[in-house]
Image (cartoon, rainbow, N blue to C red; front, side, top):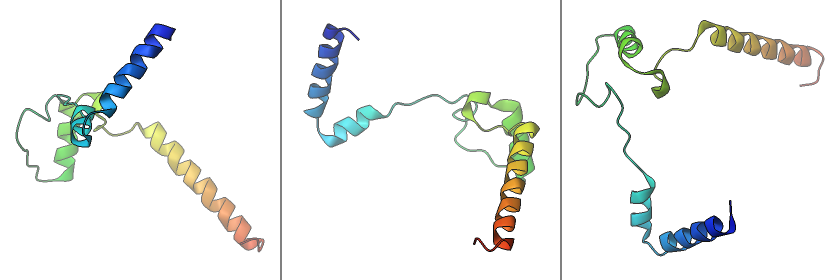
Length: 96
């Protein structure tokens, strides 16, 4: 950042500090259109499986509604199992 950019940034910060808290909060949030989610006021699903299938078919990856890859779940389960085994060993050895 150059000196002039730094100065401009500081000036903008000072201007925003003069605003009311309500105004700063209002300006701090922005609306982001979410494809498929914002296209209907509500949706009803009979089962969670139906909801998950709809998410997989209709929502983009960046929204984060899709299931994780199996490899990630497997690694998490393996980590939890290793951690549980380590706690059991500490308990057996009288450290806990």
